[in-house]
Amino acid sequence: MEFDHKTRKDAFYLYKALWSSEPFVHICGRRFVNRTGDKTLVRVYSNLPGVTLYDGDVVLARQNYTDCSQKGVYLFEVPLTGEMHLRAEAGEGAQAVSDESRGDVAKSTEGNKALQQMLAGMKFESLLLKAGGNVISKEMIRNINETLQKVPKNKDGAK
Image: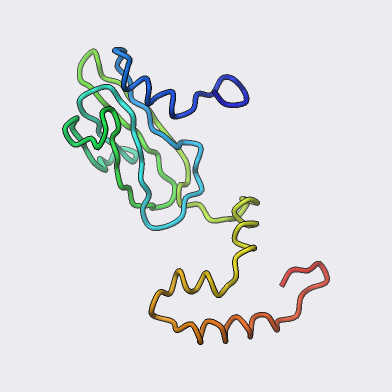
């Protein structure tokens, strides 16, 4: 349970997938909407033999029970394309169930103070090394960083 004692954590649904006979499907990480990168791993828990993941009405992927890495755990690698409406469906006929998750999973840092603070604490040099790989030399990155450090700050401390 979360602090409000109403919202169940994803672990609850993992146990449900393993122990419950009531048909269900659950998309994990639905509150984590500010994702970065080109792709993300979507984890779905279900006690049914197959799960289909949709973005709106478009089928992203299907997995059978035999494709699971762990009993009841379905993993889907999903490209981040902006605002998405994920829906997972499992079962057929009377056992058919679905779960939904909406949000901009590729949302920028705008309005996300925690992510802005995290990025503010990172040096430009380390960001370029991670992003540039072997394309930009360390010496070039240091020169760029030194040049940026010389940019005068505004009165409020922002550059």
